[in-house]
Image 1 (tube, rainbow, N blue to C red):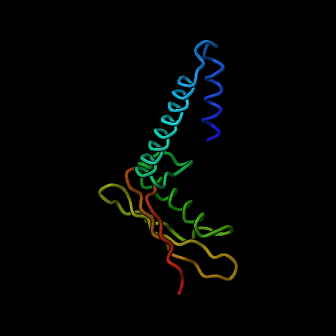
Image 2 (spheres, rainbow, N blue to C red):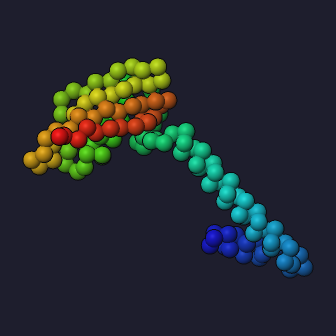
Length: 132
């Protein structure tokens, strides 16, 4: 709302004094609101297309990139001080990769296996299997 007021005030100063009536300011505020709504809707559409974008990894087009992105996401999900144990396996799927591995213990906890999906060039989901 504050952005809208700032935009309306800026527009009010930009419009010549003789044209500054209620209707002009109202139109400017309506345009700012419509612009914000359109921007928010576009951001929502982008988020649905790539819900788990892989920052720092760019688009994922190789098995190695899939393993690296999933390893980073698994460490992030497991918490600070964890590391990847053993080898990470990436299996090819029709639209990407399925990556499996184990994230290392923190303190005296056991290791935790994980499964990660890479679809259409980005990490689309990760699941850590909690120990019983």
